[in-house]
Structure formats: structure tokens, C-alpha cells
Image 1 (tube, rainbow, N blue to C red):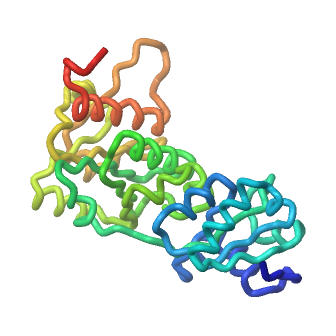
Image 2: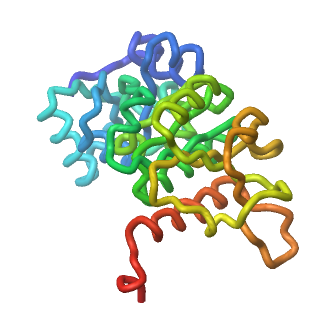
Amino acid sequence: MERIMSAANAKIKLAAGLHRRKNRAAAKQFVAEGVRLVEMAAAADWPIVFGLCTPAAATDTRVTAILEKLAARNCPVYEVEDAIYRKAADTQEPQGLLLVMEQRRALLPELLAQPRPLIVVLDGIQDPGNAGTILRTADAAGCTGVVFMENTVDLFSDKTVRAAMGSLFHVPAADQVSVAELLQVVDEKQLRLYATALDADARPHFAADYREPAMIVFGNEGQGVSAPLLTAAEKLYIPMAGQAESLNVAAAAAVVLYEALRQRCYTSSQQR
């Protein structure tokens, strides 16, 4: 591996700058950091700009295998000392391996190309950990895509990417989508539009039929789903037997999406 000896190197400055949203938007790039995340990125069909690796990390057999995969893809990886690596890293306890990657966005029509699409919509979610966790859950539940509305946290923020645990590379995601765009697609494709809400006219989440093409909207951690989408959607709530006022939005998404998975993939004869 070629070595980078200075924190003033352009590649170190680029990686460090990508931890800010405006720089990610300008460069159309982001950082994937950590052994597991880089391992998944190396196995995925995503464009990689370059990697950074510390000497200590390179001695690990798992990292060695990752570096071999990156070399097979002709991806340049640069060796850097710990102090320089920390200039480029975002995590408090860096694992010594990161990638600078090109951003890849899907368009709404791409999310609907699969038979019986099931799309998750993030409306105003501000916690990147919640957003990434929902993306990961959508992947696990077999959803065909995820939409980040324009009032939602950045799809490519460091914490969103880490919380998604590699699902970013497997589930097509559209971001910066406006309400008008979304509702136009819902109307044109005749999709069922569901939204979680605590309204009096909401139905239990298990009473909805998720077997047909549908979008499910999960809203802001404090305010819930925005008024325009809530007005257009069929409202659902998750019954609760205890004293908790509500569920965390990522937990609520898991409950609803696994009910959708049950309806779509498991008939009564398959259940145990």
C-alpha cells in the first residue's frame, strides 16, 4: 500500500470534510467506517473512491481479506499512522479502516419496479440512529425501498450509515423527496398509503392489508407524521398494554414492518 505521511494530504482533508453534510452534498461522496461496514461495502456493487488503513488494522486476518477484495476491485487503499487516521475518522474508537465512497441514490420509479412494492417513508425523522435502524429493519423485512423525505436527516450521514449496518448497500433509497412528488406517485401507481398516528380514527396496525403495493410512513420523533401526508394516508396505531405513551419510531417501524412480512410471506399453514 502507498503511504500517506501528512494530515495535510488532500485525501485526508477530503475524508475529514465528508463528516459535514454540505461537503457530502458538494462532493456527492460519504464515509463508510469500521471493519464490518467496509467488509460489506467491499462485497457490494457500490463505487469506492479510496480507502485508508492503519498498520495495526492491516495485521488482522479479517482486514487482510477485505484489503484483498478491494485490490481485486482496483480500489486504492493508503496506509496511514493512527494520528493521521484519526483526523479522517469520525468514531471515538476507530478500528483503523474506512472507505470514501460515491453516493448512490434511487429515483422513486426505481423503488416501484419490483412486483408488489413495499416502501418505507421517513418523514421528518431527525435522529440518524433511528433513520439507519429503520433502513436496516426495512432490509430485514424484505421492503423494496426506502424514501427519505426532504425534511429528514441526511441518508449519508456518518451515524445513519453506521446504524444501517450495510443495509444501505442492499435496499434502494431515494432522498430529498417532496410531499408533492410522493403523493403524485401514490396517485399514479394507486398505492396504499399508510401512516402511523395516535388519531382517534386510526386502526390497529395488524388490521391493515400490506399484501398489495403500499407505502408506510413513519414520522418525526416528537411531532409524528406531517399534516399533508397524514391527511392523505390511512392511519394506523400500535396497541400498547402498559403505561408507555408511545414507542420509539425505530421500534414502531419494526413492529409494523414485521407484520407486513408476516402477511406477505407466511400463510397460516406455514406458521408454527
